[in-house]
Length: 266
Image 1: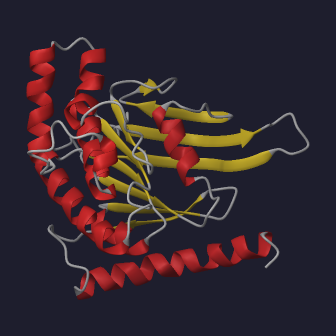
Image 2 (image 1 turned 120 degrees about the vertical axis):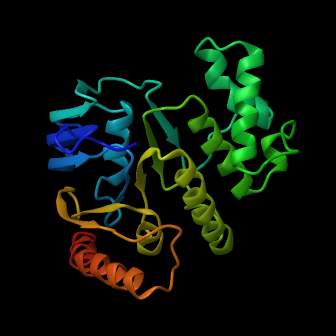
Image 3 (image 1 turned 90 degrees about the vertical axis):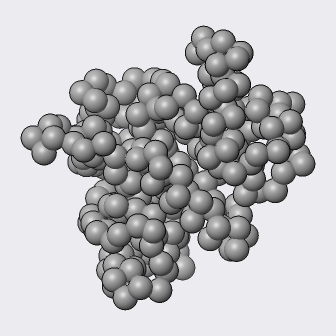
C-alpha cells in the first residue's frame, strides 16, 4: 500500500517510557524517551543488547503492557489494550496443542464472529500461503519447529491485522531452519505488503528482512540510531550492499553491548 507522503505514520510513538515497579526500590527502567514513527507497509526491526527493552516495546504496541509515560498511537488512536488490528507471533509459537493446524488458524476468526465455513476457507488460503497443504488436520506436537512457526504466522495474518508484531519468532530454531524461515517470511510479506514490527538479536536477520532497523541502547532502551535498508527483494546474504549495511548496524551495536557487559559486572 502506498502511503501519502503528507499523511502521519501508521504508528506514532512519542516520549515513551516504561518502568517496572515504579514505586519500589527495585524499579527497573526498561525504556526512556522513545520517539519513533513506523510507516504503513514497512518492515521495521528493533535490535539492541539483551535487556534493552525491545520486547517490552513490542508488548506496549500490542497493548499487553501500558506505558509509564508518553503516548503510543495506532492510526491516530491511543493503544490501550490488545485488538484485532494487531497480530502477534511469539517465539514459542503459542499454539493450542489440542487443536489442529486448521483449528489453530480458525480460532481467532471464529472468536471474531466468522462462520465456520468462511473461517475454514480463509484458513486454507493461509495454509497454502505458508506451504502447509496436507497438514490441515495435524496437531502441533507432530510438527517441526519451523512448521509450528508457519502455523503461528498464518494464524496472525488470517484475520488481516493492520500490523504484525513478531517477538524473536525464529530464535528457538536451528540455524538452517532459521535461514529457511527468514526466506519464507520474506516471500510471504512480499505477497501481503503487511506492516511489521520485528524483534531480533540477529544482525544478519535484521538486514535480510528489514526496510528500517531501529537500534536501541543498553537499558534503559533509547533510540541510538535508525538505518534504512534500501535493498531490493528478494535479498541475498552475500551482496556487497547487504554486507555494508550489516557492518553499519554492528558498529552501532558494539558500544551498547560493551555497556551491557559493564552493567553485568563482566
